[in-house]
Amino acid sequence: MANVNLTIGMITREAARILTNSLKLAGWVNTDYDDQFAQTGAKIGSVVNVRMPVKYLLRRGQALQPQATVETSVPVAIQYQTGVDLQFSSAELVLDIDDYSKRYIAPAMATVINDVDYQVGQLYKDVYNAVGTPGVVPNSNLTYMQAGALLDKTATPRDGERHMVLGEDMMPPLVNANQAIFNDPAKISKQYRTAMFGADTLGWDTWSMDQNVPRHTVGPLGGAPVVGAANQSGSSLAVTGFAAAAAPRLNRGDVFTIGSGATSVFGVNPQSRQSTGALQQFVVTADTASDGAGAAVIPISPAIITAGPYQTVAASPASGATINVLGAAGATGPVGLGFHRDAFTLVMVDLEKPQGVWMADRVSDKQLGISVRIVKAYDIQTDSQPARLDILWGVKTVRPEMAVRVHS
Image: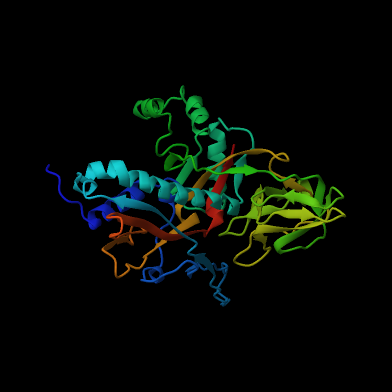
């Protein structure tokens, strides 16, 4: 095929294609952004409220029991404008699009993609369901099946949209542990060649490896914290019993359960509101320090709600119930993420195509949830053709109950 002069439109479409096909963590999350975002002139800080499903309580019997409809929403902010700045020359623009993509567009988009994936990975700090042990690499199928079971307990659908993303050190032990298991020979052969788990394995619809899988370090802890008072509810928990000195105790993203035996705080099925018989896990939503007496107020998710359509626990914690943190103080390791696509959302906004420049083009695909803009100018002073590639975007945890962390 003869080379032709590449147009800004061809380059923009190729950049969008690479972005769409190369995202790992971000590639599996919900990108069905609201029409409110598809507007010229959106800026960093723009916010849209994503409406959440309404929940109701079941009526038994014939008697009418009207109940209020309570609608909730989650605000998604446009947080980032990121991009790469390029220089075009006339000679480079005569390349075949495949050559040009390989030499220039793909490396530029790799920088953008890495940042998007990294920020999506950081949403793990919003997720309270967790399996594994910080600092210990899991090598058993059971860990990943337990991760799926946690999503089952929160009524996460099995509809082909459950995805597992692991770090580079997490995949090899799992593949190695499955070498001798009887299975589809073609699937085992592929795992042997690629050292990657394939689709539809252990209850997960897809498996991916991503170097941007986050790492978590458990807080310093200290002492033996317990619930400070009975009948607490809401998004914070007052505790006592940390070591008697004002100091950092918990890091944002630490996970804990409350109680044991008779003082256990169990989760509930979100549809039936019946106890799951499993300890409800909570995530610390901000770094937490104790005071001089060893007391602290821990901000938590989910909120402690003991009744109603949004109930989260079978009962409020008892005074003196133990706070059981997942992992030893200071333990660190990568955190894989298993999730349904609706757990998180990624929004890319249509940037304005500016006037008074040589060329400007934008590719927006609402179905894919992407928007990429390239603006090209001509600098008469230096006889150069600078260009900038931009995306404007935000990420948000929308339904944390539909995700699970796999600690390693």
